[in-house]
Image (tube, rainbow, N blue to C red):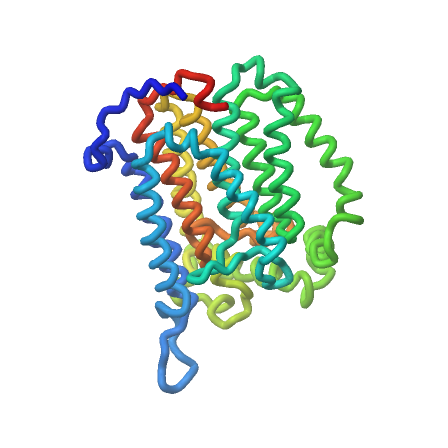
Length: 390
């Protein structure tokens, strides 16, 4: 493997000066927002219930500890060279595939799905790691091809298989939301790599044609119920439609300015299910209103903008595709969750990145930002040999 590296320094301390601190600051702000909302979802212990709203337990403190570990992973990842990530990309992808197979064989079942592996100190969800591994693997593959090769149907067979295998494994758990997210992430990378637009049109057409068959034969009963509720929200308000109905009510009750911190009624009085995980955005919206939501959207857009800025400055295709892929993953993550709780798409069980309570999701999202920072710190590295990618 030949690598022409034009690094400014190999000193880790000096490398810290090359980190995109704007991105770090924005991610820290989002983490603070997440901890704040999780604090509002807890209860302060007291001698005579009902206890006051707000408390560090049971969610805010564990989430904070995971975020501290996640930032350590972020900075460690940022210090590693792009040469290391190029050489490790397929290994990380292969490990993620093995873990998904392990879930099928030994995974823990929870809430009707088999998605987690018990690794002692936490319940690990391999599908979250797969999102980042897929970005890494596709970035390596497409970076080693010329534009003519990328437009060749034959050369697209391998990356298509690289996407299809984890999608099938994740969908079998079943986790339709993450499977869709993997496809959208892959589609973004295929697009920025230079795949012709007509091929995307063909894929979309096939999906539309296959959708009725998938609805009838591939979806589980509860998944079909969610689609039915999406198409007719009033059809099962107290059953399959309860979550989304309460979610809409909670968002609407926040109004323009919100009810204020710890003052939400729908969320605090337990009308809103899963308020600390998939529906945490709804809890945020009730307390901080439309204005708060717009500020949150601006924060999300700023984070994605910084990832794209890293890509624009990179002098190698791997760094460019990697940074854009990480930003796309974050955007798709947030978009699906937000659209879901607003009733714009069916409920698919995707949490809000760095806001929803969870271990694997927090660590993998911050790992992804560490990869983007590696592209920033080592942005003047020139990967000059095709063998570096193959």
